[in-house]
Amino acid sequence: MTSEYEAVVERIERQPGVIGAMLVGVEDGLVIAGAGSLGEGWEPAAALASSVFRRARVASADAGLGEAGFVRLEADRGHLCATSKGEIVLVAVANRNINLGRLRLEMLSAAEQI
Amino acid sequence: MIAGAVSAAWLDLPLRRFVQDSRVQRAIVLRPDGKVLGQFGFQHAAEVKTACALAAAINASGKELGKQLDGRPFLGLHQGGRSQGVFMGACSAGGKECLLLAAFDRESTLGLVRLYFGEFRDSLGGADHSSLPREVPRDLESDLNSSLDALFGPLT
Image: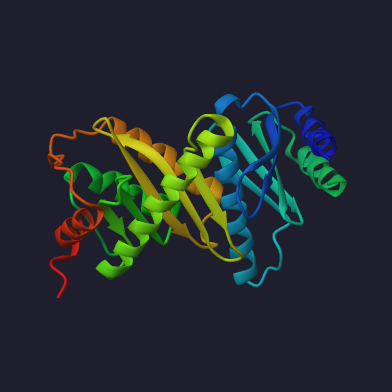
């Protein structure tokens, strides 16, 4: 149900400091649902975020650390956070003012909704 | 480093960048009639010849199917497998239609290939196509053979 997917991304997008949230297919890197103000940046962000998550997952496994449950990329102007449930990645793009601890908990909880 | 060759200088950098960024295993740029303009990842001319002939046929079928279903030709194609996928997209160089056919495995995704295909298409639009050879219409096999000769040398 598309509406269930949209409920998940809208829950994350409501967090203060979140610019956009989306659900992305791990295998194809395509957007399943999105909320926020990424404009035309949805598809590139989805493709790159799923790629980052896949590679982080492989790196984590290769390093003997087990499965990567949560990935955070820190950049000059904000953060990109990702977690997965099955073959779907939940991605949030946030500004520098985000409460990362709270966002992480919300994302892990929201991913369980999928 | 993936082995590759192009028949025109304007194609070299965009194609090389597409292959490196999208992490596809193989890529071919061709005209809709099957004439190859450049390739990366193929080792033998015969493989390129087969891929070009199939891509041209798939493109012709897809275009016609799109016209019949929606009145407009399809602009792209993706076929996903368990471990490999194929993507084909249309672009334009010097006002002439080109096709890019790419094969990728789990190192890449359709999303990444589409993303970097967009950049490839844009870079072709802004490239200097003054080295585009003047094309004399011939049959498919002659076109294929001459372009393969240019990329791989004459088949022995």
